[in-house]
Image (cartoon, rainbow, N blue to C red; front, side, top):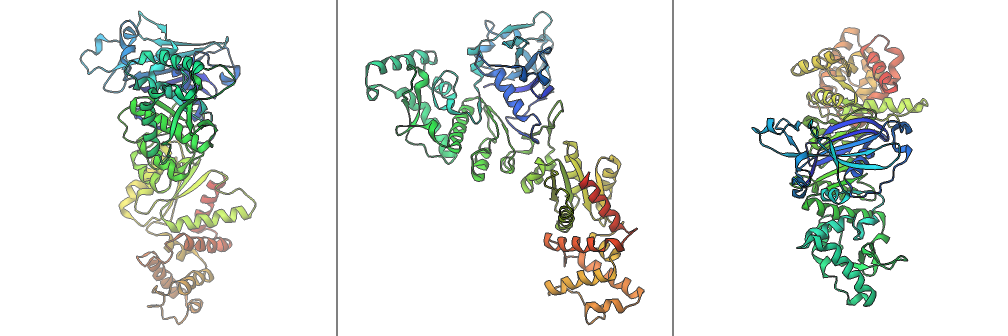
Length: 562
């Protein structure tokens, strides 16, 4: 069934101009607040929904400027057969090339495997009257109107805070489309619904035959069960309303209670179940802020279920870390405010998504080589807060433990390509990664904070810290890690005797302890130990002018405060 290949938006709400090709059946839209994610969903809903009376006002035009029309276009593939007939829009079709581009020169594309494309456009001018067209790029054709009934064949529906409509059988609801697909003669649906309504006027409700709903509702019940929602006793009943009976009065009930009266979480979950049943039948589902009203485990379960779908397409926006862990990284698109297209994430970042998804909701990211560096940055951040300045969290900064090796360089480059401002805080003792380090330096768009050549952060600390702070960080190991080899080859009976040694012997001990601290013995390789080192580093700053540690501190804090 239908799938969106590309979306174009002009002069709609906060988007002046936008174009994006979608090459996945699951599209996860992330980005900071007010970046335009929800606008994208509403644009798709507006151009594909069967409603003819969509209401537009001046505020739907970018900057309320009605002198330029709203134009929203979708190029659709896997088009319903009914729309491909020559009597419908067969003469307006384009062809999707193997390279992903679309051509409307049919004869020129005869040699390639053909995949039909239908372009649907919504136009709204200053009279605020929406018009829907099928558009052709051929020189001898322009556009022809498309009806709401034809747009309904795309099966596009939105899940948002206002989902009560999804629990009734009115002509614009997904239940109506699901019921239509379950009947042998789908064209009879309106006559059958009208017949039941007429019967209800003359018979008691319990005498009315409602068996026509059973097959489609069975699909919803089974899908809901996979999402952890037990609605086995749900049924379609006539709901008493003050207005006259219509097909809208057929709605879902549990017992005699209309489902629209349930809580937000339960309603959104059932709405998602209905939509997922639509996806299985080949529909387009739009979910704004999928996490609302749902527990983290349910969010992850639902998003896992969207993977590897062979039919239909789902678009959802999210601000939840739990909603991006399960999808493949290729399905995640980043929206940056004011940009004209989305940014897709490189496959290298799949590991970051699994381990630290918070990074993808940040404005800026610090990639630390390991836990020690993370702890040091946390200590700096705490000091900044205590000085009355904003914390990293308030500035939209996320600190990532990149897990060592050379991955932090690759992560930072790929995240920068995706539109994030990145800094790398790392050692400089691994010759195997010097080529990638040099690549980062050559780019010039990533802030790089490194130790002296050949040194790890532990060795840099033992090189630059004053004597009293050397004693403090070594005594910390003695007091908290009795299994560590601190005193051998030192000729010291206690750490305090370090101050009695001459400069040459002190230098030897600094090198010895620095090597042991960074070795497999790992004196400070967790966040708590890193925070201690950061605190000591801060206390020693007045004594370290001109050192590498002072330069690193200045670079880190200047970037954090920028």
